[in-house]
Image (cartoon, rainbow, N blue to C red; front, side, top):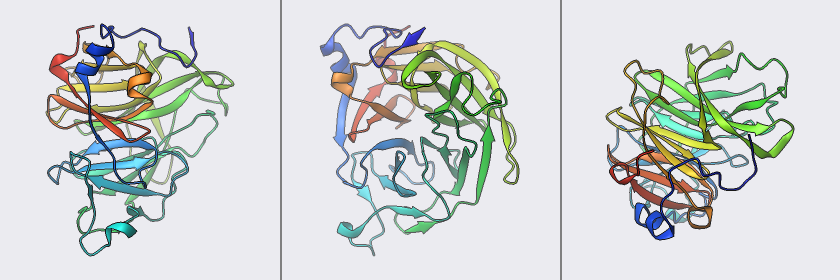
Length: 300
């Protein structure tokens, strides 16, 4: 099925605008002009009430940190007016799409692939810095990745763009965003789940295809709850929550909550993380961050 940039109705209806506004509540507006097109958002595992943010393609390679109410965090020896974010040196933001953490490292997904022709996809691995003491950091490694099913660039199918990455149980997973071949602005239903099985920095790491979910469309972000029990998957027009599988593999097998999003209200949502085991934070490109409770989402 071909999907244009409209609502698709795969998720459970919110029952009207008032119901959507009750369940998806604006929390704050990111106040810093440097965060101009939020693309990735993740909660720090090491610093309480700290969230890491990055912009989409075209920005310099940098990260911002902020508190849960949106207040920017920076070293006290730096003037607020001159703060331009934590610089990630020896890196490039060709198309950063997501950021996640496993408690020790931050992982930045350089996996944006709108035209499905890139052969330099990968992940930056960074030791999480102290946001109140660091202005510059360099990645420890860059892990090149590729989809073994893709043999031409661009591919026969345009199923090799990923804007969603999550880390859980010592593993890193990716969820793909599908387009009609040759048409950047036309999308197809469905998403693939891939797993990173090796972590080589001197050769390409082939991602392992785990499963396919036809109900997901235009996936833009994903994150696992702090207790590892739930996966949130953000789409342009829907938010899904899945229960953790027993083997840390088939993450799409048990949907436990979903809601249709109205782009007139939420705009273009691009980033998601968990504040705690119940509360999700959803960010759009315009810098609005919404809060959503897992317990209030309708069942699929």
